Image (cartoon, rainbow, N blue to C red; front, side, top):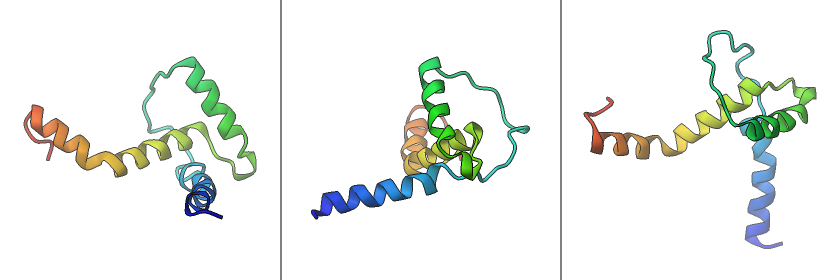
Length: 88
């Protein structure tokens, strides 16, 4: 098995743990956001695969955003700071 294949398997195993984990049981304190219908359908189908774990659409989207900001937070801050006064 190649290094690339092992990495792909590891990523496949990590994906549900990273994104399909219900960390926040309620979205009552959240905000409404509109997404494209085709993305909404796709996201719902993914979440429906995890019914045993009781994952929610809210939790899935929250996990995706958390990962995005963790991965690209410095880049986002730098981009913003180059164009406007600093965020922090």
